[in-house]
Image 1 (cartoon, rainbow, N blue to C red):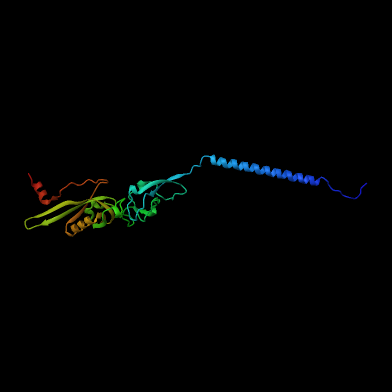
Image 2 (cartoon, rainbow, N blue to C red):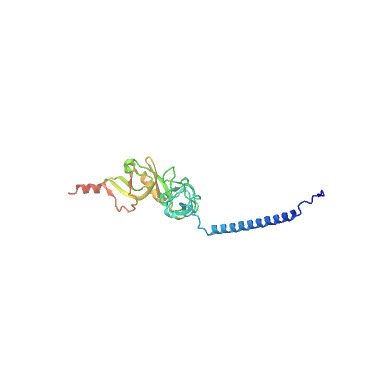
Length: 251
């Protein structure tokens, strides 16, 4: 017989508490497993060999370098940098950088970029100082221009970077004799630039004065092209027309 009273489920609270406890235990287990997994994964990363990083050679300045300086081998060094960190257009080989002229000042370890250097004698850039020298440790060098016709300058084939000797010829007119003399007066002069028949030479201040005096004398100047790397002295004593005529007429 029904009393009309709904007593409900007397075990429902117990089941709810049990379910909550089960979910809590499962959550704790999941957290523990996740923590252990994370620890093991991190340990594996620490013990794994480092990933190879692509490295490239980059030419950098070995010291602070002033603008308008010719780069020497002692001014440069090669360092290894990650490819992603290295400037894309940086020079990679010192052989290609030696002799270039800095258009801006460079600081030690600064990469050598094409935008910061120029070829010798190009774009109006010349290096008054020799490679590797500074104002503090060099002679009083000057860039001096002389106008030499092609016929007196190896057919006009001399270019920036060449080295030349200066040959001077002069006619001597005296009451008792007339003679013509020729002699190599200055040797191994670097050519910094050339524009048509105007040659810009690197000379010290004293040599510049000598050349100016020779130009004003009315004599003729010729540029004698040296072979690359040939720094040998000429070892000559000059010649005169009188001496050569005597040699020709000698029986």
